[in-house]
Image (cartoon, rainbow over the protein chains, first blue to last red):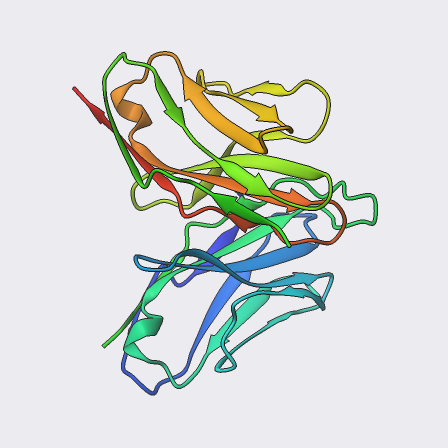
Length: 117
Length: 113
């Protein structure tokens, strides 16, 4: 158990709909990352938050957005869903993200499997 | 910019045989390097990491990886694989500071009885 909790574990929804994926990081971790894993694209970095602020952005579509709340949990919002958005969405957290670069490995949740039908 | 290349998408190997999973990276600054493992229907777990110091790093389950700066490689090796090593392995790189972690496309290790 990595200590990172993602809910729900599975989600089935129709095209055009909107869903929210939730992530609770490990206790004490300030950084949260979101990744998308699909068969054709592999593991793609979406976005990173550190202590409530957006820190880095990857291949995140405009239809997707995320935020990190004061209690450090994070939500990934996916809207106007398309069939191609079906994937495994991972959240990861890490201890720190300081200027000394001492932020090292990330701890991954079990993922949310999103199926768009 | 940083990137990671895992040349082999699948590696079949017989049980108790040695294996090497290749990883090459590119980065303009000093890096941290990681290997993660993903067992079926599970999230990624850190296997081992290179931050600084000795270029040879080991995991608790017999894997090792060597950081080779001149060849920009961080290959993962195990002298004798077990059925339970069947999984997908991801190499990842992170440059110092606020840079995100970049993952390779993964290598599926299939251990054959």
